[in-house]
View: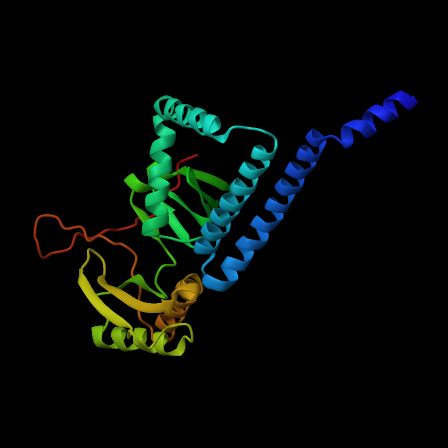
Length: 284
């Protein structure tokens, strides 16, 4: 037993053990400094509300500093970095030929990071998928949909597909289709709708609400009621103002008509009478 202890002590005092210990310390210190440096750079140079840029700066600084300390630790262990770099280059070329789709996603990710059509925390729509951006990585963008489902979309898909950023602008317009009966006064309808917008606290005064006449429908006079809201109030205003329109129309006896048809026969001006004769009782 004493012999094993002596061998262990002798090894710990050897230059090789000292090199391993130095390398481990450098690696650990590098990880700590990389994390602290990332947080410091974000506080100094990135706006606290810009989560997208903060994530890029934090990750970039972490990988750079951690890579430098790791390289120094490998040199302490006796590794020839020129050989490792050459092998890494050959491996990178081989992987590039073997995985062209991954390379395309990485290049597309760089374009997304540079162009910045959306940021972390934005609500975007890609095709039929809508969700909040959780992260923008080199390979894919990760979303959380409105029903709390995780979705991963490759960057190449985002470059080739139309992407809608729902939260990009501070205000949004709501278009509500309204149809009234032909007997209604169109000026009164316009006044009632504008009063509804004026009473709703979520409806913006500028841009001003507007009532557009769309045309003569089969059963109604068709209007489009346009109101503006702050982006965060969009859903609340769309729901509340629809209920308020119905209540206001009821108060002013403005009819929202059902689809109906008039049947003519023999003449274009004489309506066809429809009679509902009682059915005689069957003989017993």
